[in-house]
Amino acid sequence: MEPWLPEIQQRPDLLVTFDNRQVAIEFQCAPISVERVQHRTAGFAKLGLDVVWVLGPTYQQRKLQQVTLAKFARIRQDTLQVALWRGKQGIQWREWWTVDGRMYVGREDYADPIRQLAKIQQQLVRRDRRIRQLQKQLYQQERTVTGIPVCCHISKPLPGGLKTAHWMLATQLIGLLEQEPCHADRLLTMIERAEWFAFGATPASAVAKLWLTQLLVLWQSMGVVQVTNDRWCLAAKVQWFADFNQKCRELRSHVHTLGSK
Image (tube, rainbow, N blue to C red; front, side, top):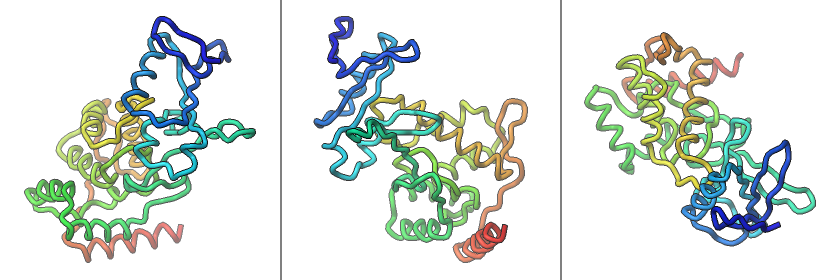
């Protein structure tokens, strides 16, 4: 308990050993900045120590905001997870998934493309900054935001952390793949440049890679993309829609088809 580590001038709450490796446990109840979490995590890493940030009752008494989840989340079993202390029950791991980049959902939840399209229309009316930027790019190609391909309406939850809605980033990726096949590193660069919450216990680049990997796996299962000569490319030409009404008809048909399977 609370061993002093002179090499990094830090004192973890616990230093435990199992499977022939040491892990620092930080039991967090008091407020702490993301910069401080990053600094302490980096210090432990210098000694080759993994670190688990465990959130105590103080944090659990209120709804965990995305900024808090990003501060303490770590990649575990190919998902973003946060450790919560449950007293006699020990540590409980909570997975962090989102559909549109803002709301928490469970693994079993799915996006509603028709509802998502209606929200996009609302954001257009409100002249949301991020949508205006994307809208400008698409207008130059004689396309519209509401006419994005169906595959851009993400049908399964993805790892949390994005401030941008998933469909917007997916649309940009499709646009890039329409130009030419791309190596995964090029796609990852685009993802890393998106707006993310500040991560404390996990490198942001690792989260971006996890998000991209899971999206590509999803698209691959849908027959949208494939790998050719070590590069990702579209498996077939994607359909863009002329207007809101045409898109709604297509989405309703798509949902009906999925429901009948």
